[in-house]
Figure: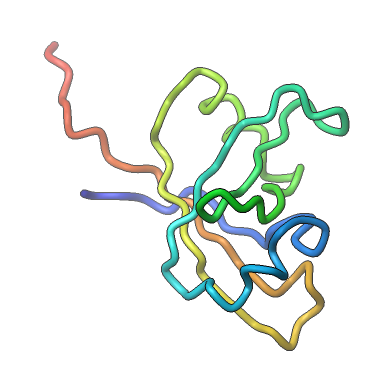
Length: 110
């Protein structure tokens, strides 16, 4: 499946959720899942990042506007993966994530 780079960032709030617990299970290329959280009391555009059932944190506010819009409308267009891991960094900078937009295999007829 073709894909195109959309954005990349560090996981916001990594040390406050399950990130430190599953840190050793994360590898470069590990697939992650984005979940829109419209009822989040701190940010109505919040997009959580999951590894399996474990919440790792959030897409930073500076990067969540477009992602949240597409997820809110039910579009499954993102492929999200671990891009960088560095245990020597501050916890909020230990895991870098890359988000791709997946190519739609269905071509619309004109």
